[in-house]
Image (cartoon, rainbow, N blue to C red; front, top):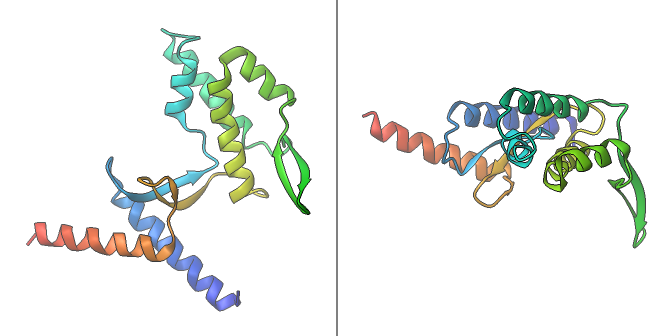
Length: 163
């Protein structure tokens, strides 16, 4: 991609992210998902059976794992080759993941693994969550034209209500 086009696309993407973050609602179809961020609600739900009446400890455990997934020195992936293509997959024998699974169960471990995989896919060098235009209804990335169309539709609806 040419530098000028890449820069323009990046600016458009940033503007769409800003617009969607401002108008984010509970029932938004298109919005912003922070790729590589631990899904706190899912993590809480996965861990609450182990600590049913201890919200403070739950919050601390969640915070600990949010911190763990952003540490660049922890990279629980291995490279495999299939059909001539190389790809990175999670090391099932990683000590931290095994300890998490043993203490809080498969569901909690899967939430952390999902965040790690997203982080590795969307921002492997930075190790911090990045905003992505997201179609929540279909649980997939939303291309720029789809997000722009949604923003325009929402703006028109909002404009009609206010006139």
